Each structure stands twice: as structure tokens, then as C-alpha cells.
Amino acid sequence: MRMADAITLFRTLLVFPIAYLIIIKFNPILTIFLIIIMFILDAIDGYAAVVEATKGNYSLFEYLRATVLRDEKAKARLRELKSKLKGLSKHGSRLDVAGDRVTEYVFWITFTYLNVIPLFVIFLVVLRHSFVDAIMGSKGTSSKLKTKFARLVYGSDLSRSTIGALKVITFSYLVLVYVSRFPIVIGYILVALLVGYILLRGIAEFYESTKSE
View 1 (cartoon, rainbow, N blue to C red):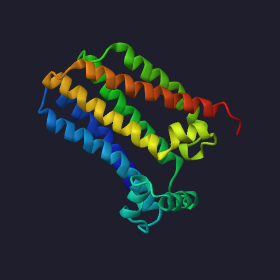
View 2 (cartoon, rainbow, N blue to C red):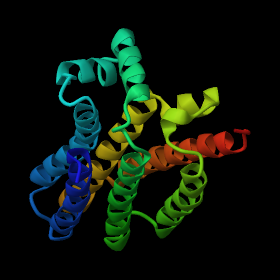
View 3 (tube, one colour):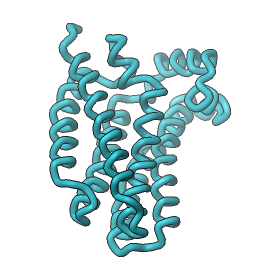
């Protein structure tokens, strides 16, 4: 198994003990720390894939310049590098998406089970992911998006960073709502923002699917 896929599998499985800690009202700070670690691993598996494909000839500093600092030269080099590497397979990218979905579903189910969020939220999320993922699965990965709208709203580094940050903030705050009785109104606002952005990204993916090859 590739290191990148192993990291994806590990961070996906990590969500289950985290969900258990939430249910038993374990220390919220430590639980949130684990949530942050889990989402950091989501970024690390992408770097691991590049390192394996380049046989170690790509530094972490270069990767951070491209993905975090968004240095244009570093981003251009990373795109060029990815286009030439056979090690970055569609299999790995789809496994990464599957890990994202499992992680997200576990959190939504957990907070629905605990009566923190209304049931219709998970209905919206499952409906969006099920149909749009099926459509995009036939189109390839986000690196192959052709429309400007889809590349901006779904495939850009800014979009990925935004959705990742929203997930961390929303799920962490819902932990505080359930364990420490923080105001639920703020939680509802965060959930609305997160679900709204998930739906917007879904619209971008669907729009991409309507365009000819």
C-alpha cells in the first residue's frame, strides 16, 4: 500500500474514536485537538503522494509554498510536476474523496444522533454527495476540471482550504455545544455556512458535468 493511501486510511479510521469521545463527553479540548490532527493528515497525504511519485525529490518546504503560501511559481512547478507523474493515480484521488466522505458522514451522523443538529442537514449532505460524486467519478479528478467556474469554486487551493477550515471550525464548535453547552445559535450559523458551501461546490461539479469532453 502506498504511504499516501495508508495515511488516508488512518485519518479516516481516526474519526470513529473521535466520534466516541464526543458521545461520552470526553475533554473537549483534546477532542478538538484530534479533529485538527485528522484534518492536517488530509493535507499530509497529498504531500506523501507527491514524495512517493518523485522518489523523495520534492521537499516539504516546496509543497507548503505551493499549497499554503500559494506562491505562484511553486504552484506552477507543482502542477507541471503532477502532470508528468504516473504515481499520482486516479485511484489515490478517489480514495481520498471516499475518506473525506466517511469522515464527514460520521460527524453529521454523530451530531444528529446527539440532537445537536436537525435531521434534514444530513439528508441534504448525503443527497448532494451521492449524486454529484457519481457524476464527477466519471469525469476524473479535480485536476482535470475544464470550466473556470468549477476550477474556482471546487478545484482551487482556496476552495479546498476554505471547505477544510469550515469543517474544522464547525465540527469543533459543535463539540463545544454538546460537551460544554456553548450557544447553539452560533453552531447553526456555522452549519448553514458549511452546508451552503458544500452545496455550492456541488453545483460547480454538476455544472462541470454538463460540459462536453
